[in-house]
Image (tube, rainbow over all chains, first blue to last red; front, side, top):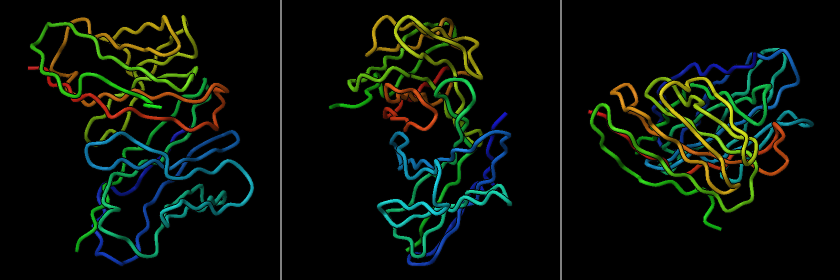
Length: 113
Length: 115
């Protein structure tokens, strides 16, 4: 069965510093991978997704993630974070049954001024 | 489009009470799901529906019922509330194709406390 593991529950980082949020997946079938973001007191929204093709995918707000098949990873990175990036980030993978997803436990990113 | 809406935003129940969490979407999505979010556990799937009249259980269905009489609405019923059901509940929907590649759209959540 597909699943994902997020290795860090909390990541504090200073403003304008780089950040990497780690996600490893376990899957025996073709892999689709997603990153969702949850801003305080809001629902989740899609940040970026890997379906096929280029292993490097980007979001509109400067985040990027690279699909690495040999390391079974899909880490999320940003070269310079802003205060507004403070949020909870979830890695997710579709389940075999229907359009349902398995979500990781989340990584809380806190950007320090 | 309003997207996915949920009511109420907050609710406090006493043990044993019942209630219904409402979820509606105006995007003509066939797939709808209910998740609960608990600290350190991420999101866990409670029930889902692949279309009107069709529902199925997710990872943690006990204590919850769902029905899908219309494409737009997918209410979640707590039959007899327990403190273990204290959580934040999210409803989500996805596009008509229902393929694994489709984006899930989430509502703003309902924060439920059971005393």
